[in-house]
Image (cartoon, rainbow, N blue to C red; front, side, top):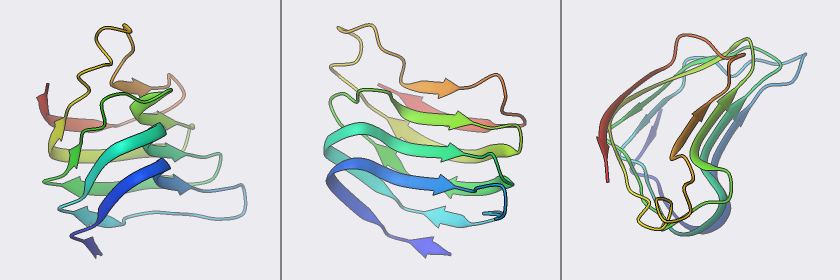
Length: 116
């Protein structure tokens, strides 16, 4: 379990990645705040290995903009469960960038919360 994580000014806020020989399953993150200058993404979850059931509760991702997306998920064995998140990207809308990208290869993702 990971609790009360504060990340500011980074290339990627949180990277959860599994290669063909590893797994990153069933981790729990609560009260995560990612803000400031986040260059690439606030959260990236990707395979190709098993990378599923990683859960986030009561978190915030609020840099003004990111180059990729605030949340990016890809991989046929990858999913995230994100509950009660606040996503803010005030400069993303002017640039017509998505806050969230869920690649077609991913499955079973859940995201609830507020966009702003």
